[in-house]
Image (cartoon, rainbow, N blue to C red):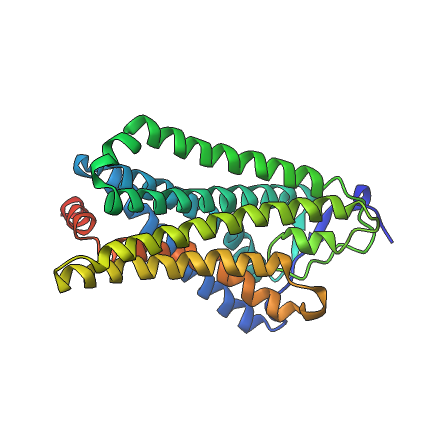
Length: 304
């Protein structure tokens, strides 16, 4: 038995006990990580360098790519290093930093995705009011609010989680420091305070998801009134992938934090965590640039 003051490190979940499979996990995660770095890095560089892309939509996309880079860099490098060196350890302070960064980037990304849906709603459903509602100052204020809210949320969760007395060992059933896994190590009822805070944060996340869905419903209703079949097809093929990725990100994240202990298992937790922490940052660059001709043209111009 130990308490939190005597814990100097945590033990993360290994994907496998076999060295060859650990190396396979390393190379798989390395490929995903490099793809995310390349995709998001190209979007950031292209938007920053091309004056024609200095519009609200691309400004928020740049913020999303920055958050995706921080999001995926919080978990994958440490997991890859552990697989490569055949270890499971992460220091106490390293775990606290990982929790802070993970909650920060997750929260801020959720808010930015909500703002992006509002941007598309105004652009398509209220185009005459676009310049008024989404001027440069309003865009900066909304982005700053998203980053600041994520920072405060992360600070609150980290302080609450790491103030708990821990007496059930130091092994976490996850490949990164996830708050529900740390709460399982608590030996007092004080963890209920953090659990309530998690539920409150997730309710805010669900509210953001409802707002995003309603925005896209209004967008799709407006799209259906477009006389051109090609225009409708283009709008559907752009909006639906966005909605799928957002749904995957928010719903799997909520499931990971709200699922009852009776259905919890290391393998299920692992799959769900990969779906909401690894997949969205890696596929967002593809989803948001795949059918964006203006961004693609700017990218090819930059590369050439």
